[in-house]
Image 1 (tube, rainbow, N blue to C red):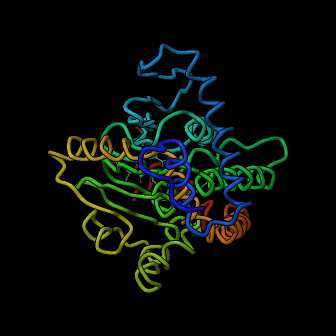
Image 2: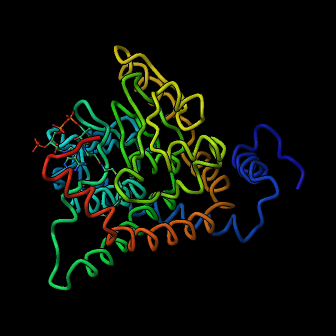
Length: 316
Ligand SMILES: CCCCC/C=C/CC(=O)SCCNC(=O)CCNC(=O)[C@H](O)C(C)(C)COP(=O)(O)OP(=O)(O)OC[C@H]1O[C@@H](n2cnc3c(N)ncnc32)[C@H](O)[C@@H]1OP(=O)(O)O
């Protein structure tokens, strides 16, 4: 229809909204609308339980601090004495926190770490908790959990930003390839020592890293375990921007607060459009990586490396 006049506010707003969708098929527009209304109704239910406008801190996590303020939900890893190593319980908590953030009324979601590390990756003690079914059963359960964990990042519907406050290891590095932006302190390092641990890549890094940095650089990280500085990771496209540690928090949060004021639905829909073409591929890559890892965890190479760390004979 022709564009309504400037004083026909309602019809002009509708026209502009449709026009902004460009050539989006009607069915996709309808589905996006249904998704949006569902998310708004669930977020208004949760908002009505707290004081309107108040910052909300949820206390139910043992290993995370989750806060919502200024349109930003912040999920902070909170095991600083273990360098934010991700225990089995913490994997579950991160999935819960991301699912809650996907439905809350915040505009963007931020993941960061408390203390000097962003995260030292998988808690190597996870493999010591063997169920009655034995190590094979443990490997099977771990593969299912890992697949769900990574799927949560693949499907996360809003802008997801990593604020990498310090060194990142293993799965805390690989999942960065599924974030929408990665801001790093110049004290951060990026290390995926899979071969040293008898492992293989996860977090879709076998697909995202070669795509981000090219196959040769990805090989150095994922196969040879080369540790990158923040500036190297930025030069290779894994990190969006690096800040001096002394001003890191101030500069990043100022920027994030400005981003959080951008139109929420537009950002959400843009992310959906960008991610849509990759989603099926990412889920397939995740499934394959988990299936390979399920066997790797049972290998002598992996068991020996884990035992060496736990018996304090080795460190990265
Ligand atoms: C289960 C299903 C999912 C599986 C997904 C798979 C993912 C793969 C990966 O993530 S691979 C990466 C695994 N991570 C590591 O190998 C790191 C191991 N940690 C270290 O090498 C070092 O701790 C360090 C280099 C990260 C830090 O060294 P530093 O000397 O600065 O600090 P400490 O070693 O004294 O650390 C303090 C205490 O924290 C314990 N700890 C740190 N990281 C881990 C970890 N990843 N797993 C278990 N425990 C960890 C460390 O042992 C210290 O404990 P202590 O005080 O009791 O000695």
